Length: 198
Image (cartoon, rainbow, N blue to C red; front, top):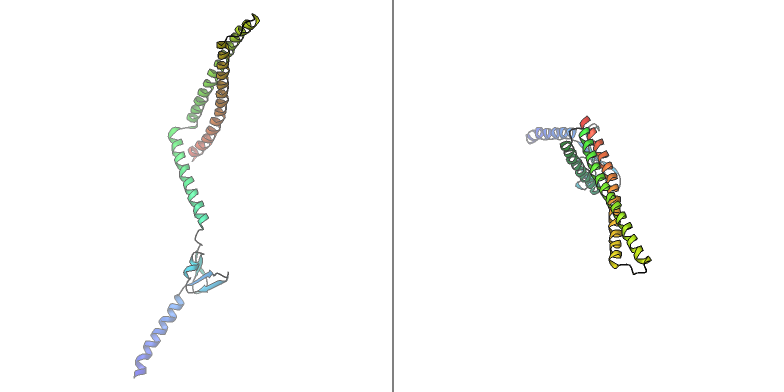
């Protein structure tokens, strides 16, 4: 009688165990020695390396990829930040210009302003040349007359030369600025065309 009571319990327990083994998933991972292991679980130290979940027939049900490395995480963060910057730049571009023609007009206006600065500086240079010629002529007259050249004339020549140098630097800077503006507007034009085409 003792045997009869326990027999059904043991049979039921064994049947349950077999069913759970049949339904159990297997995990395939690579250990520290580079050996592929098939087990009923993945040890915690190997989880970050990635693993595969297999069904009882050995078919792959799921692939868990390796955790990203610190370098990959940094690269992903950088890419996300760049994407956000691009999105903000695109929104600004669309807010400023409703069409490529609008952008072209803004470009032309900006170039025209810079060219106006160059023209003003060049006119200033012409005036300085004329002033310098006049002062040099007066200084030469004093020398020819055997007199010492007036110090005020020499100071004026120095001031004119300094101002001429400043205007020449300004013109060179303005010309570089035109190149920069042309490049920036070319990039904006290309991007705006893409955004409006989408």
